[in-house]
Amino acid sequence: MNNNPDKPREFDAVLGGETHPASRVVLGGIAGVKNRLKSGIFEVQTTALSDALNYGDAGLDLVIDALQDDSHEIQQIAVELLQETEGNA
Image (cartoon, rainbow, N blue to C red):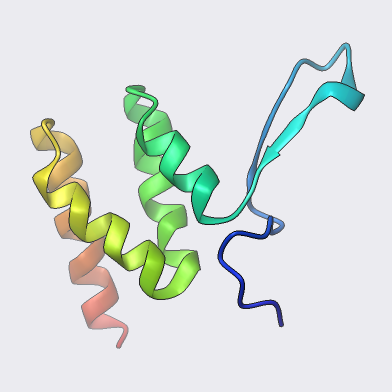
């Protein structure tokens, strides 16, 4: 198993138009999650928070950081994800 959080995985986001598939860019690993968290698009951010938990401690740190987000909704989602994670530990 590849433990490098910067390498793309099967659930990583892909950027690019469908008309030019060769120009698509994989936003892999934790870098892709960080980029999506900065998007300012609520749905993208919430999915990124959930995906962050797939990246071990680095992803967990991102969810914890989201507790300080400007958006109360993002903070609440981070709380819920952390509570779920604690329940599964």
